[in-house]
Length: 215
Image (tube, rainbow, N blue to C red; front, side, top):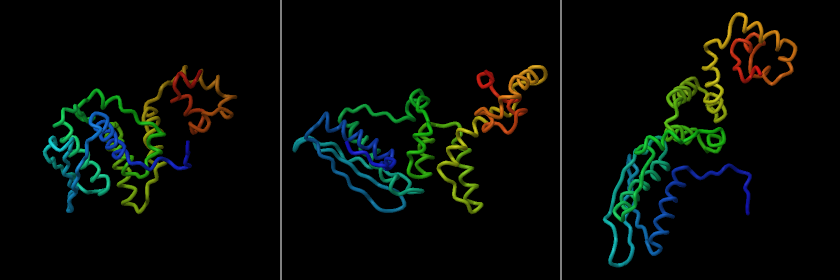
């Protein structure tokens, strides 16, 4: 086994393209794929599949907008034209958008986002997962660029995960006697606990900490 000290640079789309190719070759080991690509404002792909001299699919074409990434757009156009051809051979192929239940099950983790090689790939991953903070992330990135900055992967990841916690803290979890009780219990141990890095003060901790955190 060879282990590289580098996050996998394989674009997510290319990995999915390989899934299609592998499944095609598993079912038709002698298959050959003919792909033609066009030039212009759109990525264009035309695919036909030859099984043998007497059997082949029609030529299936697909286009995809080239912005903001021409390379990613070309892979997506290739995927579309390949799926059209494979469906002619009887393959049942679904995308996330065609199955809302599957779409909801796609999870976003820090690891998945950190393995992305660009902000654009991170945004596309959030789009595929239909993430609830997708629009907010796009606005954050755009505002950062307008102000002359360059958002980092870490800033996006922190915004998605830490930002969600901050939103939950918008409304107080406890007030009055319950607040006073928690403050009494944590008065001496708060400063040395891990929560001292998560909350600005003991008072904020008493106000917004969850029941699980207070145990």
